Length: 469
Ligand code: 5AD
Ligand code: SF4
Image (cartoon, rainbow, N blue to C red):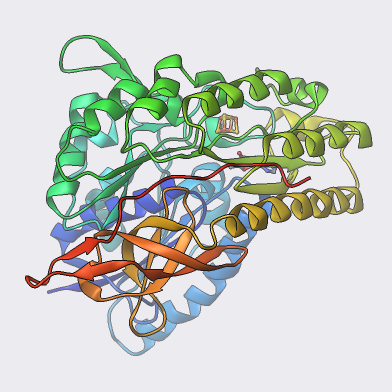
């Protein structure tokens, strides 16, 4: 009998990947994903603990789900197994069990390969099953193969956890120590994805460029080498990786940007702040100038590389002068897109114990100023594409009839009127309009007599990135 499974995912792409793997683990038990929680036999909240707000949302969602669970029981329609997974479960497992005893399972990111046992326990007994171990075995060795096609653009986790211990960050505590999956396992998963129709793979890790492993040839590989091997897979058109730490940007990985055409010209490389004093207090292990030099080297290797990043404003003790250094760095680098956050106190992290926490208004004003600058850069970046043709990998149908959505090499969302036969194809699209978050264009293809689509002219990359100030 098939059972309905609803998973809601917050946070990073690693959580999105984990959710797809939970579907794979639960498939042999008869669970099939559905689009809404009402009436589901199992609801999993896959949670994020990175900032305070992310965790708060979980408790408000649980209130709503409790009513659905009660309604299902009253209607004698079976039991809804309610689960909290992910990083909030890892960090606040006991509190969830105490505050929300109607939750049946609470489990951390390293344990979901044991879901069948947890489900069996939860079905038998009253009370919550709590599992926040960091087991000695790796879940990656024990997870089943993917249960179905993973889509045109898919994620592949290659690395997990973090040993960097930035003083603001919960990741080393919720995801544990840095761990790299073996190269052979990754290559096998990538080949299965491509055989199932995937054309673009994004390699995932909290510190993805720290990935290292023994290659099948006995040598130690870094991420650059892994990317070169992945590029040999026939049919894999695009490779991306996220998220990287400046300290782990090895020479060979930089060279891969110059030498591997499948490696897309977009890099998420968080710097967090522009002041060396703040960077030191954050334990980032690099200066602002280290970052500037690194971006210069990357752009020497790949002149059209679009930069993305993460920023925290209002870190404890950050002065106006420190913050001005962040604005200066952003102006110099020129970002195609970036994320910015107000510093959020995370219990248990070193920065949370700092005395000099800043007032909310100061954080708010700095965030606003930084966002204005980043938004202006993003708009300028996108407007630079109008009138130009870009190769778009269509990976989804759009909201409007007859529209497909895809991505440019530089990660922009592009939508265009296009036949569904173009899903999974890389098609040249002329950009007609740029919005803050997307591009709109027209497919520049001709249909041959055999119904094949071919691009009308070869693609010429001609993008220069300039800071908008
Ligand atoms: N407060 C605000 N932002 C944070 N991040 C991580 N921890 C915190 C925190 N305590 C941001 C960082 C990181 C991104 C994933 O989230 O910028 O790169
Ligand atoms: Fe957190 Fe720093 Fe590790 Fe990134 S590098 S996951 S910000 S501790």
